[in-house]
Structure formats: structure tokens, C-alpha cells
Length: 132
Image (cartoon, rainbow, N blue to C red; front, side):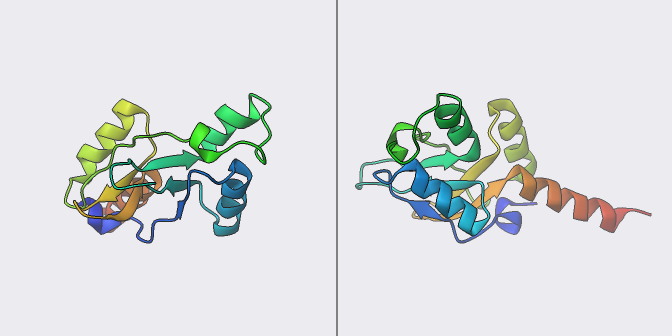
């Protein structure tokens, strides 16, 4: 099974100069757990801000999300995977690196996001189809 068969398309992005509060609002509005932080320029890297980042770097440290910029708490640079990568290999990488999601980059653009939930769901469906 390949990443492009199970990934979520339509990656949600946010700019690094926005506040963490804006990221929280967007995540709640869209019912998602992470946002890709867009590149600032051509040489810049993508970043990511997740629920875990907000808990670890804002809530636990008692920082004000309305005054804290995403750039100060996001993870960057981030690892990306290719749409043609094997899902089992990506699952192993997730476990080894303790990462729950990877942006999917086709060599030109971000085309999706693959999460541990996507992998679990795909294998659960496969298990039920082959059961019996």
C-alpha cells in the first residue's frame, strides 16, 4: 500500500508570523490537530504546529497564546514523505522518530498529510476485508 492511497489531501497551512491563538482557533474550527506552517520564502522550510506543540510549549509553560508567534513554537524543518512511499516503511519511521504525521511532498508541492490515524484506518479496513 502506498502513501497516496491513504493520505489526506488539502493540507491546511498557516503563516509563522500569526499567533498561536490564531492557530488554535483554526484547528478548532476545522476539527484538525495540526497545521502546516507555510514557507516564508523560496529557501525557507515548511514547519508544523500540532496540539502536542501547543500543550508542551504554551500550556505547560503558561505562555499567552495571543502574544506568542507560531514561529517560536513550531517544529521546523520537518520531514516529508513521498506519495509513492510504502505505508509500512512510513509507519516504522513514525514509531522510530515518535512522529504522528508526515506532510506528503511530491517533489514540487505539498500534496497531503499522512497520519498514524490514516495508517491505522487503512489497515483496519484491510483486516476486516480479509477476515473470515
